[in-house]
Length: 221
Image (cartoon, rainbow, N blue to C red; front, side, top):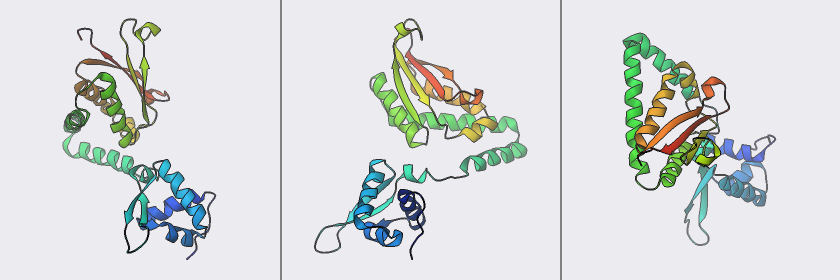
């Protein structure tokens, strides 16, 4: 079977791996009707972008064979309706047990998440902990990054710190319907960085282009 080409052969490869689960380079070349050399080049690029991964298998004598599959980041490129399902689930829960119980469920969720983050972030300098936090957020689908700021530049006037910026919210649909989750997120960051003050500087829900948090050591640290 030969697949008709879309504008991007790389997208063809990602689509094929999504449907089949995994494939060897030769299989991709034959199925997509492209040369083995071009296939290997595309696979190298996609792996460099973090969209696919491979594992080696030894099939007898000679070089090991590489089997390619989508990484988590690669799977996340494809549309899903998880947000819609989550909102529908919370709506049904509110109708069943009431708004107060839904708020309690959301509070328990952020407490559980805070415990998980604390265990994975561990100890270290503020820079090390914030960098680990950003990595965790990226793994969950947030387009997160940090910027170091200097108190002399006017953000605080006294203390240095970091801006955590999230340009894409992985729970945007839930946040639109249940904005209290954003308040819980702020509490969660404060719980996992107890020696710091956390201040929201930007909020997507208010029409800004990202969510931003100013993270600084408390005055008594």
